[in-house]
Picture 1 (cartoon, rainbow, N blue to C red):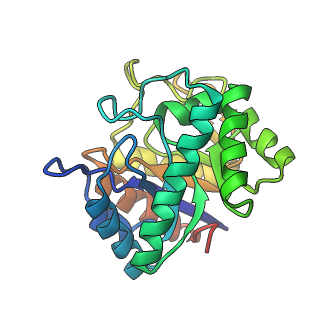
Picture 2 (spheres, rainbow, N blue to C red):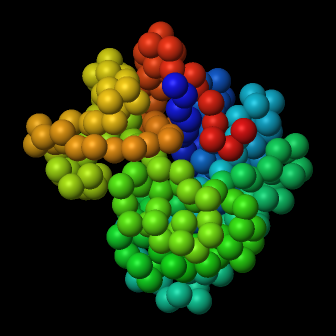
Picture 3 (cartoon, rainbow, N blue to C red):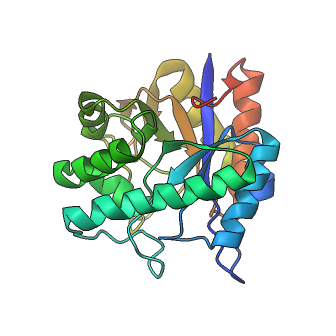
Length: 252
């Protein structure tokens, strides 16, 4: 058995530090690197990309709504022409930085509110898919396991990867519990690691109401901006490897 372990990185901005990219790059197999719309500045992104290249970690463009103040977590009704151009712009910017850093962008994972919106919204999903196809049809789209987005992207010709979240609670329908709700973010590293081992082995995860939901996932995300991120990623990786699960990027 094998699984990809990814994290959202490159989210510091100037003097404001977010997460520990260096430590996380020693633990994950794929890095979703911010593109400047929800977080990240060019110098910081270049430094993270260089660290990813040195660590042999695959790189993806973590595209988002243009929302620095809200960290990309506020849903927006963006016109299709703007959303398509914004996604193209972000991928292109990260591709240039990655090239200089000695690596390449091999996939796209939308961030925050954009990620959750396109999991269900056909219009915005189509815009993001169109933008990726316009840049490079070989780029893989990472999306929420069990969401309609994955089928829409496959039908359009994009390779897809289904993703589960280690540190987030799920509703009984397989959606992520809103961050505005209590219990939405998980912090117990041991509990999280056991949840992810069960997911990999049995394809199930316990929802917030105690029911079991079936999820087929190719990648597991640990959010890099969490104060517990390094401890969680360390425990998840150790637990999976001790059970014989190999950590390997889908993009390698």
